[in-house]
Length: 376
Image 1 (cartoon, rainbow, N blue to C red):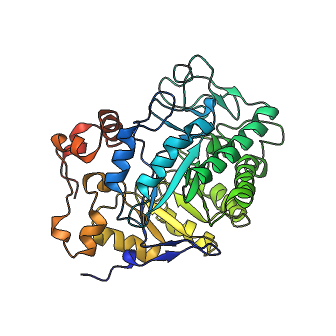
Image 2 (tube, rainbow, N blue to C red):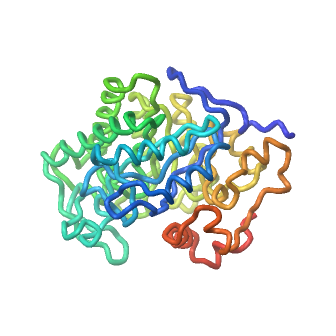
Image 3 (cartoon, rainbow, N blue to C red):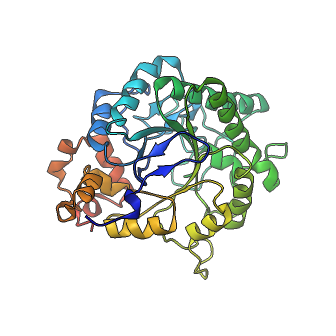
């Protein structure tokens, strides 16, 4: 068996949590919850089938309040009544030592009145997203901002009570945390918007709230992660320089890792086509070891994972982990030739991937044709 860096364990600084390896399963929208956000048996079966190899498994995102719902079939962690299902979900992941992390968010303007059952989507300001069929949101009031921060805290408490090993705050992919940070979606003139410093205030307040809840309620080490998208293509939009300044502030917080959401680990700037800088390398250098970095995007083979892990702390295996739930185990057993890099439509149900999940995967991959073609 090859001596891969990604198979080495990783211990979080100042936390009694050790990952058995540096492979992470990232959050992927599976849309298999009930309409109200309750965990289903299909959901727990999927996670149970795909866990056990990676050091850490991050769930599909769960909303922290009723206005936070962004799509049908979405998990919810907004009420104590969801705890029994969330506990089953955590336990279904925690097999063979894999750590279970639940990702939490508010969708903000990336929702609709249909999904919110007649309610208007909310955001930092009343600026609609630049996408087809987007609706104009209403700006959250001061009181609603404070309540949303508390809702993130309450969701963190429920994650602790449900038995997860940590939470990941979803500050990426244009959702509410990112909407407050973005100069496109945040046009406020109060203390929650305007300057870069003020646009950081909401996400930093959510991090602080989660930190205090963990300190108060966790009776064992519990991870707090944060996910970012380093740029926006909108004008005005988040720039790499904005993100680097935000990272400087994140270094002053108690987060345990930073997860950079990109379609390719080695991606260069989307805003500056003349730049040859690798975004993740620039971010890594700015982080300067303050916390570990998880990178994701277009990693399929052990060789690609090893290249990423030589430069970054942990590497996430997304779509490839769907076709090959035993990817890590096959590498560990020296059986790399048996790793599956493509999938037949007929295999999806056997892999625990229900039709709603199939449609979501196909959408992110540009259609079913791309989904079923050879992936290696």
